[in-house]
Image 1 (cartoon, helix red, strand yellow):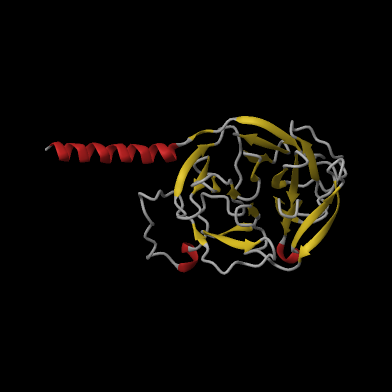
Image 2 (spheres, rainbow, N blue to C red):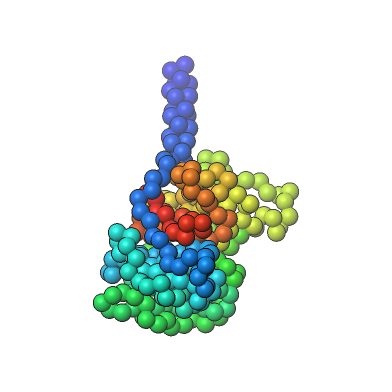
Length: 283
């Protein structure tokens, strides 16, 4: 009787622990990055592509998606913009990341425009020009936003319900099995049975989630981040198992988008407000 009661208590405790691990907390706003230009200006841009932190320059770099003539902006750690209104992306950018091996701000562009890197002014940190490092379509589809995994020198992309892995040294897809995300499911819940669904539906990003952008946090056991716009939360997944490990509620007054407008840099979760034209950082 005592053993049965002890087992029941352990099961309940384990269940409570699992729920606590994924219940998470509510993020709070800590900073903002106001992008240049207004909607009345020429080539203002609409959707935020990415934010990246340069750990040597101690600056943020933020860019719009959609056109090489859309703004790129450089910010101090305080959020003060350091670049002028006329600084452009120079490339039709999707993802941005800092590569500690090359010590450069790098990125992936739309479609077959390739991967690129910026040459920065050594004093101001303002991008002077760019270089195409790897030509061609080095990504799963035209629109995906690349993120960098420094631990393995990899660039990761969301590809339906999978994470595609590319070698940052040569922009080639790695000969390894892609990571499958088990959307909204913990390891205790196991893999969802999809045998009745069509193959196309099985491999797609669910409607509730942002389908272009993922995060790489570097947090052990919660390395991959996705944005659930229906539940108004960031969900963190274990990169090895693909199972959900944490939920972070986003402040209710922030509008969440089904594509782009979502990033992670310097330990901060970033959400782009299209109406206000600014990135809002939360921790």
